[in-house]
Image 1 (cartoon, one colour):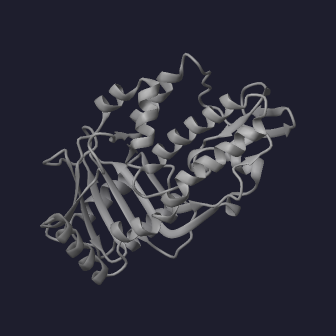
Image 2 (image 1 turned 90 degrees about the vertical axis):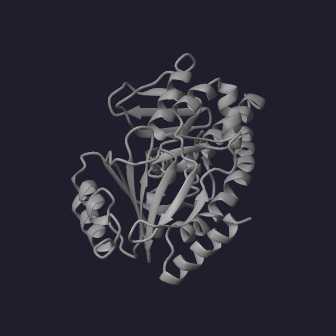
Image 3 (image 1 turned 135 degrees about the vertical axis):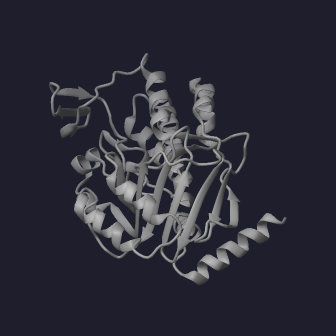
Length: 330
């Protein structure tokens, strides 16, 4: 997905260790979904293939993104100051720090500014340049909304594909969500409600299964998400005393790995800063070198993931389903 948003966040092995060190693992497990399997259905709702959604049950949890954010904020309250309903409007870095101008608060000075504000990062724009220099759309879009549609099981995600489109129902943790993922060469402003409405209606105009019902509910929802699937390409994650973290630096996949990558990256950044507290440039270089080794293969995997979730032709759908059925027999 456009990695700033997922139905839920996958906390994988590396991030799992971070959660253990933070002492929040038990809370994450309490908030986790019960999903273990993704099933693919035909136009009548008949199951045609399936795949496990977890690589392992021992070192992985899937948590609604809002719950993950709340748990991490609560864990950090004793060590960090939080300013909500605020944004940075200007950055003036020099050799010793960064002068930061806020929208509402008085200006302040910091030793280091970390832009961890998502794929449409305002920090990246202010410090590095316009978004178009870094965000590379991959010809796909994602739309999600909490619809509360009843589901018989809370351990299954249900997905229907037709060429270039996918529609899925996810049980979440009490109120189900719908996701629309589709291929399109169109370039629209993801913030324009009329443009995204028309693009969705065009993409799903002849898609079967429960599409008409779910799309109507999505279009009527007050809190709905829509964005392009994109990849971030930045030659460097740091510019002086400003650095990037998470989706702002490296959007990685369609499977919710962005949150895991951000947690791992934050731990790596903290470790390199602790090791070189008087040489921030060295610490930032070590952070980027180490964490790029983690994100690089995940970025390469996004196109493979898209072929699995959004096959571009009916033949590709058939081959995907056959391959999954063969794997399921092993």
